[in-house]
Length: 114
Length: 110
Image (cartoon, rainbow over the protein chains, first blue to last red):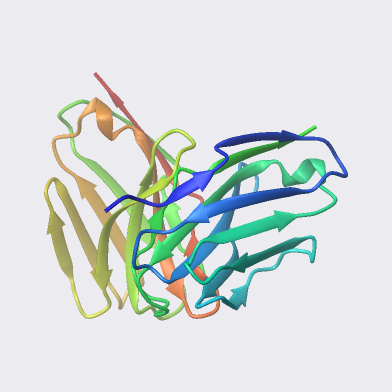
């Protein structure tokens, strides 16, 4: 099976712009989660989607949003970008909704905000 | 805190030596997972140990779990330069999928 794929791999934006990141989970996986990784805050949970519904959301402002499509592919959107949004954004998938499953991560999207 | 805390923060060893990394946590868990990350890339799942298990092996990896002490250790035997990476313990949580510690930076010198 192909692994989790994320596009684009690298992105450079300026403050105030918005960005959309895409994640395709492993075939058959219906749960997709997003994480933000920064040197200062480490790995932080953004949100989780299962069957097109957001199940959980981390402690991030409303500028961060996401959605999941019927084929389980997911997108996350960040509006009005700030310098502090520069980070590695990681997507992970798992077969089912159970929270205790292992997660399969994609290679990440490196976002730089200038 | 719902996340684990890894110790040490950084570890430097010679190729062929064993590397031991520890993770402590404060609340009850369903399982504890270890992940590896190579230089700012995606995380790779290494091993999952359930709360009713005490020890688990996978190749050169050995993980132990002591729920009474709320701690886990990851042992990498006969380390290789390719083991150089960051290692994270992760705790699954119902409202946040996985919570991660700050990670341990392992350097294996050839």
